[in-house]
Length: 297
Ligand code: 13P
Image 1 (spheres, rainbow, N blue to C red):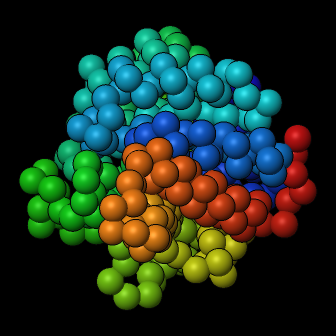
Image 2 (image 1 turned 180 degrees about the vertical axis):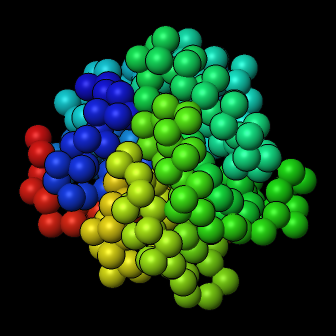
């Protein structure tokens, strides 16, 4: 069942849990996320990042995402991630996305407010929920090697969200969920992530919309639970799951080749290995993010 971003996050709020939001730039990852949600009975968000346009175009993967969500017995939101361009947002809305993130965090504050408000008006016309970002997590999702800084984000420093500005931002934009920066970063962590829970708690005290953690893969379970108990309701998860799936496909190829030098390595062997890895990662992650909540369906 396809549901709106605000509705799926309300379920998370009622159950003091976070909904996993998996970036899914392949059929295997879309299927793994939906199958894991059906298996466990937890809601799920499936993201298409604008930065993954070169991996798989929105016009190709978007209709597949919406169709599979509509057919599923699980509660699924199809969400546009890190959209920096209102014309790209319009395309996702026309395809039937039920959630979208407009990311104006690199813009000057007033411009971020003005564009986020435009995005809110556009989303309202399509019954789509809206997430916006204030503060900056540094490098963005992009295509292959997305954890690297890209041209647009080179040199961009991570800046924690200002709690007072967050209250003003929420009031002046009409968003449904706020992505905040409090120590997580996109991509592979160079050391232990250091989360600023005091920043998160101060934001929570000032705003009453669900809060979103980006850069969610690679964080320890205790930190996930602390963040959820402090109001995080959506956790974006990509890099580590994609890495494990890539390694699983690589190992499958090597195991096949070890049987004989001439053994064929078929593409479907690799996509199957990747699907199985993603499915298993997603089931573990969703169980952790449930934070003790019972399956809902
Ligand atoms: P990671 O790739 O670091 O898990 O972050 C995902 C994300 O925040 C997508 O918006």
